[in-house]
Length: 248
Image (cartoon, rainbow, N blue to C red; front, side, top):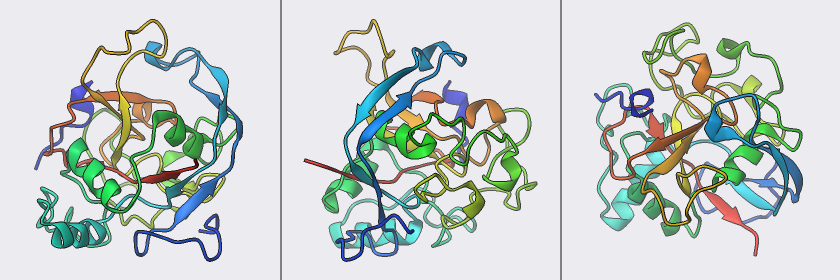
């Protein structure tokens, strides 16, 4: 599982709603039932069921290098590991080379949190349980920044050899208009990794990544794929994050 990531080197925002992260609005996701999990994928995605979701709001894009650098300057927190990389460190690209505690600290600084798995999956697949944010079509190159046919190396058939600007691939937006919930970079979630059923509440220390990345093959690029990962590892060139604000 770890090999899949360890590559080292609009309109839904409410008018007048406070936006903690400049240039990255929070998109409202309404309450209501939605399909979570699936029965025809890997074992750790089962079972599929309908859950009742609470309203929340999620960043429209991944947190960018520009946004993360501003946080580091304001707080003295360490910069993203690839902040100075000639491609990965461009201001409009997702911040990569951040551990789970780094991402958690960023979100908390802005009064937000990392998304839970259920929040991420609801934002990505809508209420009806789509395989991809845009629906059922598996023509990924037109809608997401993805890798080669065999895991795990990048290519430029989608226009980008590595990360794409966070505002890219509008055709791959979710039903509420959230971008790049599949492809570009894996994204940290709040949850500790464990099976959905039959697991002790105290077992495991890995956190869950979602969404696949610029060097992921099609198997990893669905709205339900789950990846267990070391929360302290900060050297992945394809791992980033975004934040949420939950209802109370």
